[in-house]
Image (cartoon, rainbow, N blue to C red; front, top):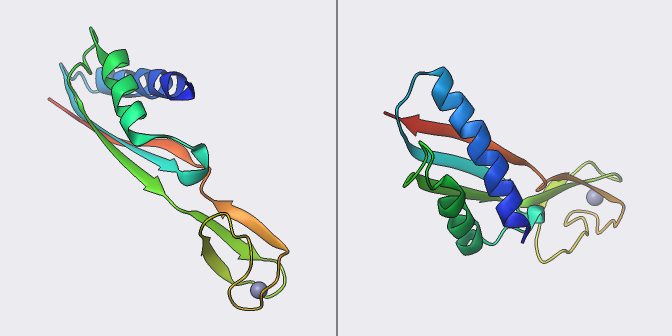
Length: 113
Ligand SMILES: [Zn+2]
């Protein structure tokens, strides 16, 4: 389950950031994940709360935002959202497209107290 590894590293980053601010507790962690990361939200939420146990992030709410896969057509330059893995330009029907979004994975921000 790769969600576990991702949750673990995100919590480590969140705790480091919170400690830097002198926070006692993390109440919310907002994460942005691209669709191509294949994260299952329910699994990820579960892993997150598990990894947060016995840390200052214990009980923190996880806000998970999944961003869509986007691509750019190399033929006409059109940028578009890829749905159902259909890598075809909607404007010129070209298939020579480059994936530009959907692989990101980052901690957007945290809320502490
Ligand atoms: Zn095109």
